[in-house]
Image 1: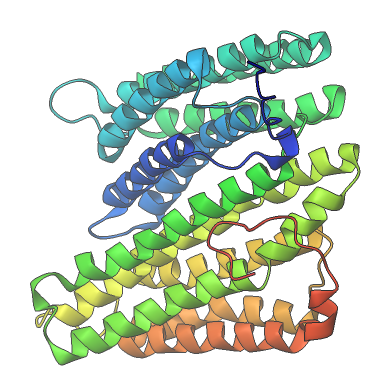
Image 2: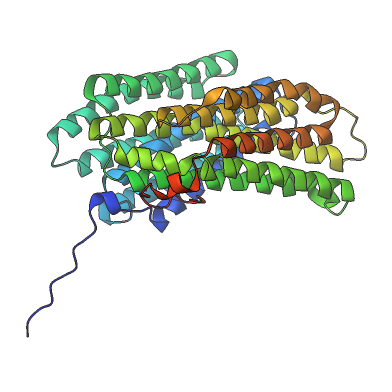
Length: 406
């Protein structure tokens, strides 16, 4: 009996994000929520800065696994086992995150966070080197980057053993070495090779939409037991409108064109676009969402508390409007890096977000409504600049991006 020929396997450009990778991303976003627990209940500038540093370190670890999953399937064999070890380390880091700067009872919190981070990075570099067995040039690039990264781990470990300013200074130094080492690796050896543009764009879209879910959760946390009060319900609904606007501005107005540009770019430019527009710039988007979610939660707690004064904590107002400003600025940079127009109107809307923080301290509910109005203006500006329906239909899509409206 003749054997039927097997159907050809999809090429690397056709790979999509797997459920296993989404599981990894859920653990990553859980770690982000624990950063919010570190900053709360009363945000201060120092606490927000410490949270931002931890967010950057987590982001460096996460994007490394994104490149690895783009290079080789993440849910198969040895790589899957390595991903599971990394997820366990990330989970432990997330649990210890609220004690990342001030050791509490039990094991030392800062040391747990740093050791988990080192495990994350070491497992990634080992797996990437193993997966690049047939590419000596890529292996040499990975070894170079591993040496630079290992230098950055030393101040992180030393900082975990110290307190106060020395702790913070050494962790900032370790972060600087990691980021500078990555840029140095790109400059000397070239960007990491991108195998599947569709997979890559979809992965970053998914982690952003999971992060947006955190802003929805923040509304429930902030409202607490006062959720049935009409004023609390009204403000929570305005917060939901803000989240919908953030989704629209990226997934409806920006992401589809960016995915097309990434797929259409020549190989060398595509690798650089992936590194700059996605790996670097999406940190601004995720950080903006996290801090904006913190601001929404603080506004709702303020409205729900009958004993709260008329003014909102200044740091909470900065988190709300500063998060929106960072998100809008990151989106414009992302548009520019993917060849999309920016324009004076979009710049003006992004620039108007931060000055509204003064309104947030004086009138918290009205401030959230003002932010929603500003984001609706941003959507109107985008819609005015969209190509006609005929122009859109002439373009061939490169595949759906998670959460996108097409």
